[in-house]
Each structure stands twice: as C-alpha cells, then as structure tokens.
Amino acid sequence: MTDIRARQRKIRNFSIIAHIDHGKSTLADRILEYTGALTSREMQEQVLDQMDLERERGITIKLQAVALTYRADDGEEYLLNLIDTPGHVDFTYEVSRSLAACEGALLVVDAAQGIEAQTLANVYLALDNDLEILPVINKIDLPSADPDRVKQEVEDVIGLDTSNAVLASAKAGIGIKEILEQVVQSVPAPAGDPDQPLKALIFDSHYDPYKGVIVYVRVVDGKIKSGSKIKMMATDKTFEVIEVGAFKPRMTIVDELNVGDVGFIVAGIRHVGDTQVGDTVTDAKKPTAEPLPGYRKINPMVYCGLYPIETSDYVDLREALEKLQLNDASLSFEPETSSALGFGFRCGFLGLLHMDVIQERIEREFNIPLITTAPSVIYHVTLTNGEMIQIDNPSNYPEVGRIDYVEEPYVKAAIIVPNDYVGTIMELCQNKRGEYVNMEYLDTTRVTITYEIPLSEIVYDFFDQLKSSTKGYASFDYELSGYRQSNLAKMDILLNGEQVDALSFIVHRDRAYNRGRIICEKLRELIPRQMFEVPIQASVGTKVVARETVKAMRKNVLAKCYGGDISRKRKLLEKQKEGKKRMKQVGNVEVPQEAFMAVLKIDD
Ligand SMILES: Nc1nc2c(ncn2[C@@H]2O[C@H](COP(=O)(O)OP(=O)(O)OP(=O)(O)O)[C@@H](O)[C@H]2O)c(=O)[nH]1
Image (cartoon, rainbow, N blue to C red; front, side, top):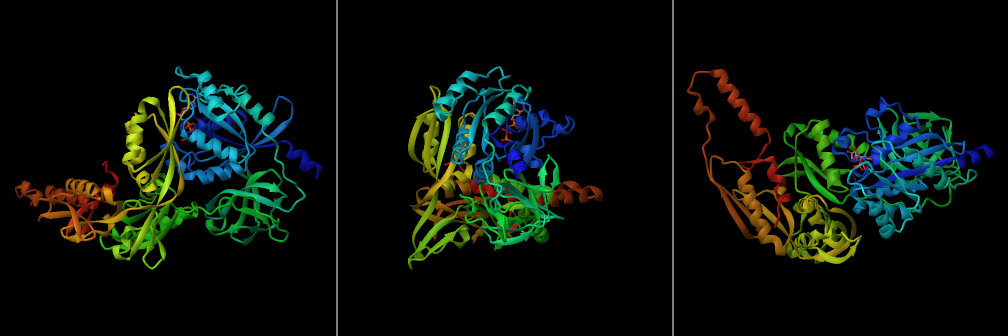
C-alpha cells in the first residue's frame, strides 16, 4: 500500500485550456515530443486530434488522454496525465468533466491576441473545478506578440498571478521544459484514498467494434482491475471488467488502475448510453456511498431533420446515424416523415457546430447526400388546457386556438471586441432580439459585452454575422439562461399552393412579415424555372404575408443537338440527370437542396 501512496505522490493530472487557435494542440504535441512519448516521425500527425474532420477544421471535438513520464529537475520521475478538452462552446459539458478529472490546467493565451471569450469561459470552468491554473503566454515568436500586455490582461481580468507565467512558443519549442517543471511543482498530486471503495469519474468513452464501449476514467478512490464487478451510478448498470489500461499514448493494457490514475476500462459494454460522461463508476459489491458531484444528463439543444436525397439511402442513413451514435451519446435521432421530403430522421444536437460535423461526416464518410431542414430549438408550448408540450419540430406546432402561451430558450452571450466595434455589436444583438445586460472594459482597447438573446436567433447565422461585421475580431461564448415567454407563430411556405412541411419554421410575430418576404425572394432565386408558373407564398395561420412567382420556362437541352450524334445526346441527358440529383420533387415542383437551408441565411 505504501508503494501505491508513493506512486500517487508522483502523479500529475492536467489539461490544457485555451481559446480556439491559441495553440493548445501544438503545445500538446510539443509536450509529447519533449517527454519522448512519440518519435518525431509520429509527430508529423497531430496525435491528440484524431478525426480527419477535426484536423481539417482545426478544432478539437473528442477529448483524449495521454500518459507521459517525465524526469524532473529534482531527479524524480513523474507520471503526467495530459487530458485534452474540446475547444468549442457546444461541448462545454465535456470540457467541464475532463477538467474534473484533473488537479491543474495550463491556460494558454496567445501573446498577440490576448484573452478571448473562450479563454474566460474555460477559466471559469477550471475555477469551478478548483484547479490550479498555470498561465502560459504562447506564440512569443510572433512579431506582433506583446507578452507584457497579455500578462497584465490576465492579472487584471482573471486575477491570476502571472509573475511565474511561462513565455512560450509551441511552434518553436520554447518554454516547454519550464512548463513541465511548473506542472510538477505547482499542480497538486491526486488526493484520493486507495483504501476506500472504488470511485472513478467517466470523462469520455468511445466505441470499438470488437471490445464494445471503452470507458475513459480517472480513479478518485480505490482501484480497478480485470475481473472487478463495476456499477455505473447514474444508469445503475453493472458490468464485469475484462481489461484496464493506460494511454501511453497508444492504448496499453495494465494490471490495475490505482488512485489518481487516468486510463480506460473494457467491460463488454454495448451501448455508449450506459456510460455517460460525468457518471461515477464504483465497485458493484462494495459501492461508494456518494457519487462524484456535478453529474448531469446532457440534452440536445438544437434539432433538425436529415433526409436522404435518394430515397433508397434511407436504410444506410439509419445505419450511419447508429454508427455515429455509438461514439457520441449526445447525438439523438428518431424516424420522421415529411410529406415533402419523405422518410428521414429528426436529429438532436448539442449545438450548430455539432450538427454541421455530423452532417458532414454522413456525407463524407458514409457517402449519403443529405437534405437538412432548418434547425429548431425546443419551444415550451402551454396549451389552453394547462398542459405544457415541448416542440422541436415546427410541423408539430399546435393550432393557434389551442395555445395559451409559448416560451423559448434564451442564452446569455458574452462577446469580446475591440472598442471600435461596440456600436456594430449592439446593433447586431438588437437585431437578434437581444436584451442588453452590461459592458465591461477588459483593458483600454477591448470590452466584454453581455446580452440575453433567444437561442433561435443564435442558431441561425449569428456567429457568421458577428465575425463578418467585426473583421473577425469578435469572439463569443454563450450559456443557456432559461425560458421566456415570447410572441411566436409558425410560418408556413406554400409552393404552387401546397404547403411544404419541411420549410415551416417558428418566428417572432414582429419579424414574420419581413422574414416571409425575404424567404420568398430567396426561394424564387433558388428554385429553377419549371414547365409551369410556380407561386411561392409565406403564411402565418391562414394569412398570406408574402408572395413571389417563379416564371415558367421550357428548357430543352436536346434542341441544341441538331439530331445526329447520339453519344453527345446521351452525355447531355446524363449531365442533366446529375444536375437533378440535388433536387427534390415536392408535389410537382423541383426544389434544390439549398432551398431547405435558405431559411437559415436571412439578415433582416
Ligand atoms: N507563430 C506561432 N504559431 C503558433 C504557435 N503555437 C501554435 N501556433 C499556430 O497557431 C495555429 C493554431 O494552433 P493549434 O495548436 O491548432 O490551436 P488550438 O488551440 O489547438 O486550436 P483548437 O484545436 O481549435 O482548439 C496553428 O496554425 C499553429 O501552427 C506559436 O507558438 N507560434
């Protein structure tokens, strides 16, 4: 037992937190390289971000962990567990759980950019988890770097002492050793008790086709080894452990995981849902009395319909969603039918980025072209009989006569911008039905502006507009702040007199006229001319608020072929067929795929 305690004192569990692009992954790579966990040839690929899509978009979606050994200046060898965190607002809960598995965090701040919105959001999460925060000022090699200003900003805004902050360049490999020495000296060793019953935090999981769900854990008390019977406290499911292991950085089987360790468990678990992030694993025979604090079930915030363009892809689409769900318990889906689009799925996501990622993976990895309907938040509709129903699909919106009142989710949005853009940001937020909360100066050049904004407005094109109206200088973060009563209505779109269910959306009544008009115009541009005239109408209830018309046209590509060359004729026909692939027949109108997303791209 003394061995275990001695070992425990040499463990350091830490994370790296940063705003997107401030250099978290690059620093992680450098640390892996420095500690010899990987050869430089292996380093050519960034190891911590594994999915293609992640690398392409330069963002971290799934968190990972890696165990490193480091001989410090004091001559002792330490076991450093570096736990990676996702870098985007959609995944706040996952960030928070991986931080809960650590005792310390490196706070990476770009020496040229300074503090940004996610720097603050992540610092708050680290403080909530009582972590020792070690500031690292990165990218000091940049000509525009101003480390002194950024250090001052970290002191003033976050209140951290920066006298020991490491000035680093992850790219040039400067400051890496100093960072590791600080981790060893300042991050506390794990505090748990090896003699208590097993208590381990699940901070991630992934599905392996042969082994089932592999659960990533941090052991807080006790130990775990193969043959142990374990219980998941939130789901009350029990399993027998088949193997345990560590991330070295490849997954390596070990005899047991002890107090303070970070590693994985294989226990023949078939459903990711049985092993939710944040849950506590304990000994099934000798359970701990209390689970670890802070577990909450994560629920999707944004819903949309996913439909295969080719009806024959329906079964493949279901299989693709099932496969993706194996690795992503926060993705939800159920079958739905649309009279316009046929058979598809209503899918729930943590946020817009999550939605984009899933959609892209289906198209790319599974090769299924999709039509996506406009995203919707969850509305709380209280009926005249007093019952409250939750609506995530405009098609299910009740008749006006049955509705007493409707509430919609609001978020608290914190936006950091240079002073010059304050007016622009306020105008944008006001346009999005935002309510001003406050404004604080970060330093003499930048402010944090806080607004309460309906989530549905953020879900549309808020982020793009924010970036384009501030030349990319604004950064932004939000959290759900609750439900509020709102004057909402369902808007329907009619093509050639027929309502297209997949184009309906919920809108604030004050905006209904404007949105209706813009969408009709947009659809007129997107829908190609057909053999007959196609009227486009937007209506709220029975009242038509806008109307446009697509004029009729006869398009005969073969007319150009002067008879004769049959192969040329066939080529043309095939080309025309290709062009049609991305079209959907709605009633007797052909509607291009983009039309279903058109409701998204409206600035009013
Ligand atoms: N000049 C310079 N560039 C750096 C340094 N560290 C990282 N970068 C660059 O900054 C960009 C972003 O770095 P990443 O490591 O991908 O940033 P990240 O914080 O991991 O981003 P996410 O994975 O999206 O959270 C890359 O182009 C890096 O090459 C540095 O010390 N100096």
